[in-house]
Image (cartoon, rainbow over all chains, first blue to last red; front, side, top):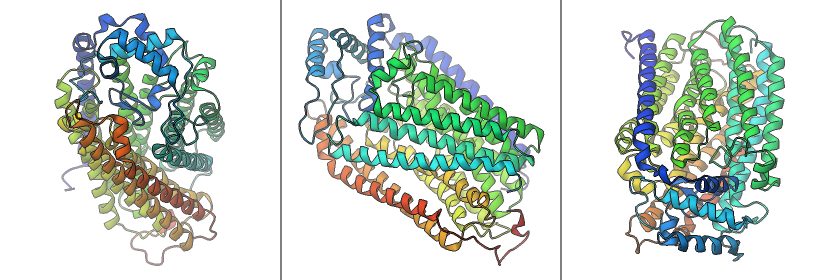
Length: 149
Length: 471
């Protein structure tokens, strides 16, 4: 670097640049969280049951194999749209599907990836299904590209 | 080594390397589970092995950063560490808590672990990379606060160098952002948004300050280039890192609920994120070309060049490959993400820790000019085996990812293959990745072997400018 460009100039770019972008990021965060998100995350349907379902999701470390809105592990299918894929967008169909699926695990097919038996109660499965249904209705810019996730 | 208290870095480095070995072992288990789905089931299900793999990585890198800090801050400040005793106490607290947490993952069912650690009171578990019980998270926060206190007391009473200031700024950022790991609202979109405040703003934000500072320190020591020049570079690099990386967080906001303007902001700023890494490459090679001494520790020099190059490839190039929103729409959450994650973490953070270890550990072992020639050659074999293996792991995962996108993401609903059918179709790539992973493990064994070779390097015969006495 040319000698005209001094260390204190470099430091000022660092301090000024990072301060500016931290503030901009905070302003954007404020706009995202306060203005934009309430219209996109269907929070009016965020019931206690959905929150309980989120805790079932967390307490069993589902994200250790599955992805949810593309985030998590890539060992097992995406679940943000599983309500549409396996429940055809119908709550009762999906509840029935979830019940059958969770109780059928593991398949014990030799050599195949196995999902553990989590011994969830019927209530927990219902909560989990409600959570996944709510998640499927978040406006996420039309991701994933198709039903397979 | 100028100050006796720098020696407290040693247990941190040793424990970091032990955990590193554990991380790679579990990586191999995961790699095998990708192709032999029921391997070790139900004893160690995939989610448990993955949690161990990623958490070991995070914890050993933290040990590495702490070791690096304890080593270089006193020397930069030209004073003894404020309290070596506190550093030792915190070492044992962190080591015991970390080990217990990993054992908990392995031997206690996760839901039970959540239950007995009273996750209900403050639910923070079950989120990717933040799987630790809340009590462990609190422990990490306390250890980091004690560590920062010790380091700041040391830095404040001595010489204030840019390396110290940048390193400590990065560490404070690390501590502050960790607080977001305790925020877990019931609204998934808010949870995910602030989860990235820990994950992204660590690895694509403040950790780059830590990496830059450690690299700058090692280059000052190895090349003898004027501190003023190196510090100027350091400021420019971290300026670019934060200017691009903070708004660059937006590339994670594309598909998790936030509004559409993030598609633009995230794409544009994260497309610039390779810049600081590119500058690190220019920086490292420039300083080495302008060196005023030939330091006999050639292995450390190799790691320093390697970390700059591999961080640029892994974080910079592989990050850019899938960061633009129209591309990311199809690649998000595919094996391409995994490919990028592996090379970026290895290049930027694994290698910077191994760089400072390569430089500092011989000195702490009474070999001020580095290990013997034989030991250095073995270490370099370890370097090349691990690094080339990681390149292949990345290439194979990228191949798997491209095919996955082609089969599962690009076709319309109805024509696209299901997730599991796609996985069967790309199994060959997973097998090749597993082979590359075995070579990585072999490289790690060779690398560890280099520590057991006796002897030390002599002062360089060919010295230009100031001699290496100050090494």
